[in-house]
Image (tube, rainbow, N blue to C red; front, side):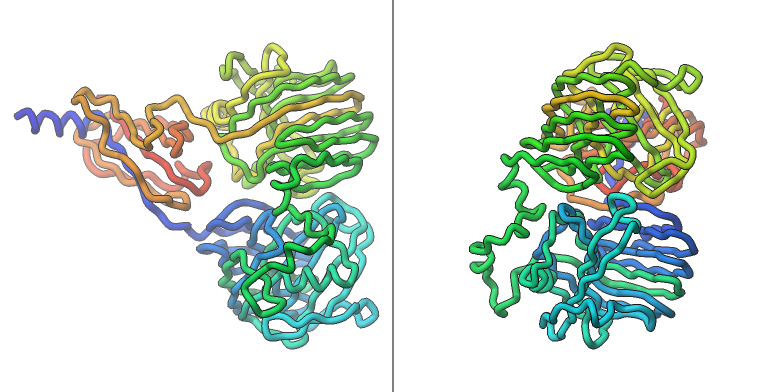
Length: 540
């Protein structure tokens, strides 16, 4: 009788699930950046039509009829030693490229390692520098220039570096370092890596492709051996790429123009539309800045980051006019610009008409707002998008910001976040002057639920034992459904926790009859890839 009573109590009181799932296919039809299958993907077009299907790992398929469109999956920031193994069904009609693609910063360079192409434009013979032999083929090296064209830092003028294989192929291995080193020997200076991706690009054409790709960090194959001794003695400044920033994070770097890069274990960005400003990059997440500008943002953080970032900071902050200090970032699908504002200047703040409640976190109360920006700059170009705000009622310039508390409060109010593009600490100035000196560190924090350090969940049951969920395997993806069973009719609540025990989603999912039920993927649309606990509780 005792056992019968116990199991009835267990079924009625609490059902806990841990799901193991693989990455599901995802279809993209508009500009976006995100994480899928252990890679960063990006879909970008200026105009036209296209569809990208994200598959397991680095694999994807695409089709297009567009002016200029790029489909890519890869590593950000990546490094010189990426080795790509791929196979593709590739059917372009017009100017198109298949191969490795990416950007560096300081200097700003767009680069291509082209393994196959369509029947349109290729770099001209007049821009040819030399050739390099790699992975069983010979590639011609070119330099071209783009004047006032789109880039990762907005419209600007920049160089393009090219390695174009003399004979087309659609499967094989690409050892990226062989090309990067050949470019360097020709005086083609690369900067800090922003990305190393596999790309299918179309320009004023139609086409389709189906790509299977994986990317690893390999050894230098220049001498057909398995050591990198020569690289250790290479004194070229271009070896100070983002992969070496951890050893160079004692260096202070000064920025005076738009740029994105890696420094001190964080991603930084300096952005302005016009005016003057200087950003000094310091150890870790630290930086200082000063400005006299129309709109300017200085930030350091994690890309893509996640909902569980916890920020500890201290700042000397002296704004004159509209300015914000706090956490800042973007999500995609939907495109949202968000702020968690700790302090501000004497100018604009969101109006009370946009207010959508409050949230208490880290010893303070924050007002929540939703505003709209119409045809304004964004990470996807000029767009109309929502802004989500948490603004602290009393200013401060030192403390802890538990980002998940705000994100969860927004979600509960129907403010839907998308896939995270970044979580950063920001100093922003708008039609103002000012200066700031910021000390900041960012970690992935614990929540306040019953998940403890040994990865077991305390169910709160009074049998003197912990619940039966203990250590689990690493899993990826987002569930497409969740099936549960209840013994009696009643209201059901769903809570989802990450591996640190922080609550990611909470839904009162309604009244259900006794029996088995399935929740659709809509309940999980705000989750990114990861490991989760699923907790379903009945009113009894």
